[in-house]
Length: 163
Image (cartoon, rainbow, N blue to C red; front, side, top):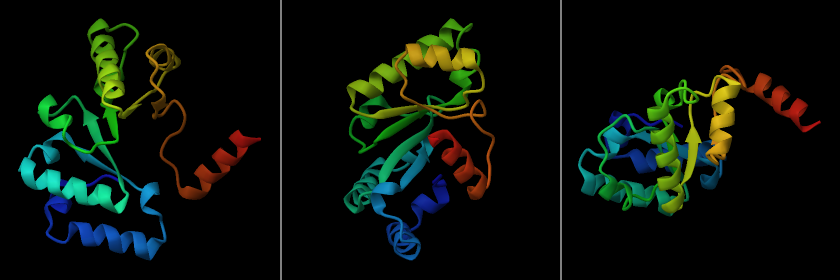
């Protein structure tokens, strides 16, 4: 679930997340909150406290659009982040753009060494998929697999894949 800066800074943010979990019946470990680098880098002390409270609840945390903001690698190693989501601007034409390939490979290696999972966003071609497989990127998302769809369509899609 994407979280905006306004939501994250609300005084009752943690209670809102707890209430959402209670109302929906979703288990905390099945919820991943996605925050951008710019949200994380605002008031780092308070951000760290909030992130730790979310982790105490059992929620997973991801940095969305990684590489496009102004994060400090020093802070990155101290935030309790589970996943980095590589921005699609680095994935686009990765087979032919050596700079994008180098940045993507470095993010994957860094995430792995920090015991974080990584997702490549915006995968739209088989060429991009093949490069990412070669870089050992385990998780990908993008239009290559599916455009956004309502829950019933996604459920049908997943059920067909299982057969």
